[in-house]
Length: 217
Image (cartoon, rainbow, N blue to C red; front, side):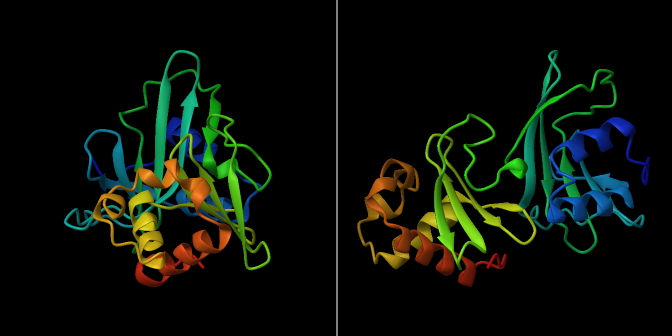
């Protein structure tokens, strides 16, 4: 069964959440174009690994951080698409199901990949709080209504999605917060967002970046 070519509909869906006019996403477009599906991913049907060679992926390791995520709607159904960051020349992708029976691919696309500073959220048109970092080399974006955080990188155009719980832990460390009810409840971050100034949010990101294996800055 593997390796196999990526089907046309699979390529279409992946490309739709990788904007060609953004350098970092276009790089992944080119990487994927040169790969094949080499094995199943962690989560069953519609979840695969892409790569250049045949050996089966090692599923004992957790999935890499998410690189791009989006929702596609063609009027008859809605698809959620996830592309993970490349690790060891492999990229894990997730369609949620086998999508090769889809014939209509005139999709409406919603994806954080398309966001640029000054825009509302591509998903719900919600207002985005923006925090400038390093003279706008990076923009930390927070959307309370969607409970989402990402870091816009101006050089590549990529919006790096940030796990809320890990970021919130870093914020609590910076604030030297000892109240367990606050520290252990990351949902409070969005409820209390107005209490945190830009310096605190930037400092929390620096702590997150320092201690996570995934370096963003």
